Image (cartoon, rainbow, N blue to C red; front, side, top):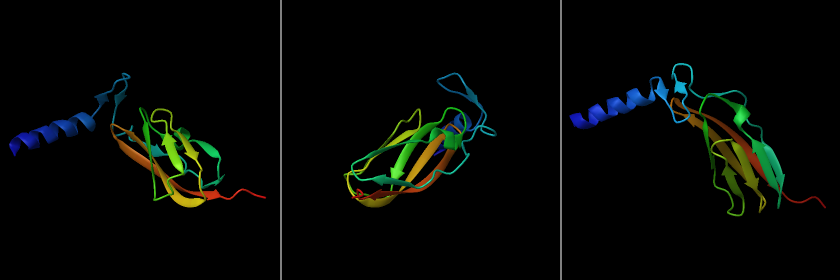
Length: 124
């Protein structure tokens, strides 16, 4: 058990103190933890269209990596995010409503912003 405790302490020290990352930026977890600057807004997309949403400006912090999750949604509605740039693409293939959460993470923690997506029928 002591081996695991020691390893855990080393990992905590590595991720929660000023650390050197691949791009050469030292993170100080007292000041560099990701923060939400402004909430993402709800989106309405017409079915069979795509939405490109720039999410990077939503968060503040160095060395951010982006991920996305969505509540249960129809399989024809697909989401992808650029882990480095934070651009979210939603391909709307079927009428639906679901929640999306964008998560910005660095070695000091994470910040999240959620919003609703409504995939609406084409106007006639």
